[in-house]
Image 1 (cartoon, helix red, strand yellow):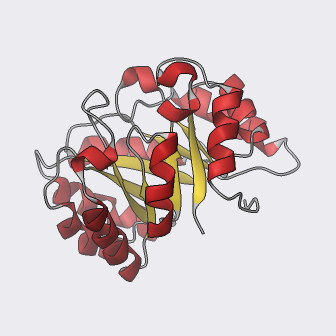
Image 2 (cartoon, rainbow, N blue to C red):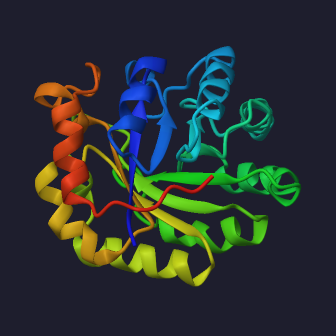
Image 3 (spheres, rainbow, N blue to C red):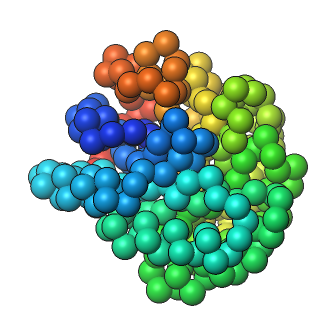
Length: 234
């Protein structure tokens, strides 16, 4: 079954998304890029807040739009995981040496750090080729997203068949799967039958589709109604 991932930009939005039934709460600053990171102290505050709830969705946190430098990537993943989140999301770019970054993160993944690789559909033509490396390194999951939020949503960059192949191959390697990238409410009927583990939203959850604006409870409710709700897990 597919879960709803809601990207939140503040502690207030964290609470709103949890109350609105999001299955995964994703700590991300949309004004700081495709995978804009929260400050580490704010991530800790979010984790502490969520732990006071009687039940909570898992928390993920992005590490920012980083260059494909294995030392920089590894340091940021270690720092973010130490904040106490359930997943760390790292964007992998075709420029630089993404394979070296994956290899450098293998020791962390094998120590229990749950890392989700984000591959950008508008930058990669062959993102699937990294899936075996991600699985061998011990990554928890892989998802497709978009880097350029002004260039159209995920379905503009990848056909439904290409998305299906990505998901099938990732599942075959035992990876959690996700789709995101300026998804709209009317994309959901197309993507749900592909059965990703989660669909990620920001733009569709904000008033007037402004991803840099505030989360809107009515928009969240509309997306929640369109994605069958899942039981909470820690």
